[in-house]
Length: 137
Image 1: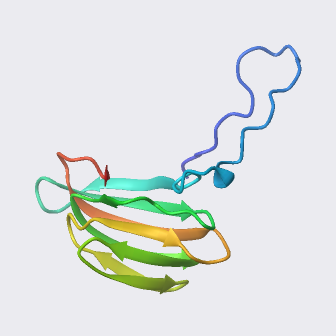
Image 2 (image 1 turned 180 degrees about the vertical axis):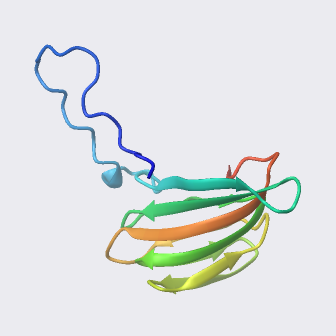
Image 3 (image 1 turned 90 degrees about the vertical axis):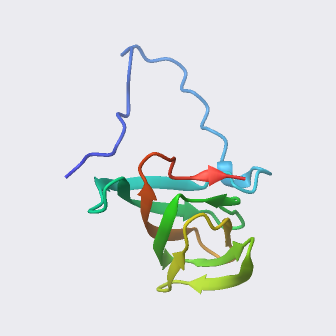
């Protein structure tokens, strides 16, 4: 098992006044603040020149992913929450806990949390290995 936790302490062992807690990013005016994408795994795809990447995306209540695209398909599942998946070239889709979704390569989209909890999505991408996973707009 991979330990993804950061150390709790670093540097000097001398006690000083503690740092103030960081600002809560979910209360920022930036509609994408607090959104996280955690990469779980990355492997070469059976097709030469392609990668398979799996992530967990978390979107706090009242926040959104921001308009973006991927250089390959995205196959996803809503683990928790409610999102409105908005597309530049098509109608929006309302997705709820337990719903699967598919986004074609290069399609510009935005996932907006319209529920009452932090949305969690499991997404698997098959992407061109020469391009970044996400391009923002």
